[in-house]
Amino acid sequence: MSTSNTLGDSFSSVADLAKAVRSRQVSAVEVTRRQLDRIAKLDAALGCFLAVDERGALAAAQAVDDQVRAGGGDDLLLAGVPIGIKDMICTEGLATTAGSKILSGFVPPYDATVVAKLRAAGAVIIGKLNMDEFAMGSSNENSAFMPCKNPWDLTRVPGGSSGGSAASVAASLCPVSLGTDTGGSIRQPAALCGVTGMKPTYGRVSRYGVIAFASSLDQVGPLGRSAVDVAHTLQVIGGHDAHDATSLNLPQPDYIAATESPLHPPGRKLRIGLPKEYFAKGLDPRIESCVRQAIATLEREGAELVEVSLPLTQHAVAIYYLVATAEASSNLSRYDGVRYGQRVSPRDGELQPGQSALVEMYKRSRAAGFGPEVRRRIMLGTYVLRSGYYDAYYRRASQVRTLVARDFAQAFERCDVLMTPTSPVLPFRLGERTSDPLAMYLADVYTISCNLAGLPGLSMPCGFVDEEGSGPLPVGLQILGPTLHDEQVLRVAAAYQRLTDWHTRKPSSLGKESV
Amino acid sequence: MSGHTPSPRISPDEIRVTAEMARLLLSESDIPKLSDELSAILAYANSLAEVDVTNVPPMTHAVPDHCPLRGDVVEPHIAREAALRNAPQRESAYFAVPAVFAGSDEGFDSEG
Image (cartoon, rainbow over all chains, first blue to last red):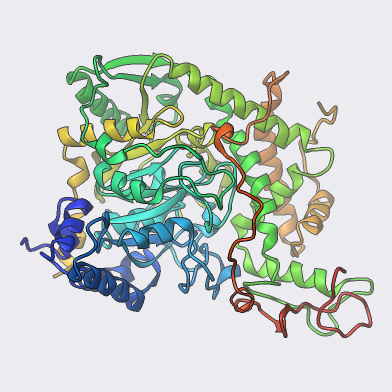
């Protein structure tokens, strides 16, 4: 065994780890204990976890060991694999807050389908991961509880909203995690933390038990060290779920087999589309250089490059902020202090004549429970859904959204996948970009269209930039595929990772701090 | 198609009306800031008015044809006690809320 800090680190993939647990080469309890130790040692500085479920994790690990010892467990794809869950996803008996004060203390009475599937596959839920409140943000700075730090530089953000999901994998606090992605919330933090993260085609993964932000855009997906690990996790959490009316009733592709397949499709060369709108003004030239080198690597392997155009890209952020806020304002109306969460009632004498104590309770509970970004988006969403504005805003945005999807469909007639930068900017410093919400929104330009069109998208590291005073900072390459071709995206990502070793790099400063 | 041209500027009064609809208690000092921020975002979003959307259907799902509804049959569901466990306030088997009618001191009410 190596000298690394966690047993999870001693295995090159979660599949190897699960295999070792199934063959009793190592016990799930030991893996879990080491993982908990590392979290205890490092997470105070990182802020990845909002809750660590030591007792539940050890009990789950023990159950896996018992099952294996009794001669079972052969089909447990993630036997004994520790996994962190974004706090947007309900876990029975384990507090779930969505990063919001309004849900502090909320303990879900049931598991999200994805969590139930993970447990059934032998995965060990190790804790709940930090995030921007209700997944609204791109830096994790909107968490109501604490910021999460980028393991490559603790003065920088990990991205968001699934900041904890990406940072925890980068810091080896868990080998894989789940995030949610509404406008880039898996891919952008994956890019900023140097890990692999995937948003599947809309409908591939159940949203049942996942706290809703923007229902027509939200999708759950895995983050891990490699496309192979992501594929294994996706294989477990994906598939049709009768409890989610948007869940696709289609056979699930073999994601794992896809990661073992060659780069090129049978009988011809892979065609990579490069949308010119994604290599435009505002892109950090150092990021562009890493992304172009990654593409050149695949070109040397025989891939053909095709320039494509997605002219509606310029409208993507506008569509997103109308659609997402409108849907959020409706989804978040359920937080009213009645059935769960925080309640703030008007004090004696505070009620004006004619005011309803009930309505005033709603207003106070919501004002006290929601942070500024969530309030801003609820306000915008409520405004655009107001009578008389619906057609001009939500309906029009949803129509332009159709055109965005058609743009992509047209581009995919000429190529198999698209490759772009994931984020136009490197991980920025905490506090650096909080003052201007619109500027923060505009940085999501490369990730948003994928959600609008419902496409599968993945981000993985494709290089590092040495930033003055920071050391190396990771750069993300985004791969987008046609609707329902998730396995194609994973195939190309895994092929790239067989050719390169960017995805194996780990932040060095953390290694030194630990034993 | 609506003939309504949205106002490029959301006035403080519009913010107050919207906050009432959103059931958010805003402090007076929040209002001018929200008025500025929302106006800026909507001014940016007005670029969508340039796009021709004649006969374009709105989109809500990438693959809408494969989402069957499940059968209308009773399935096991969360037990009442489990559903009530997170309630900030309850009375017997109900969620309790402040009295809805003035002068009423009942803890909860059926349908307002």
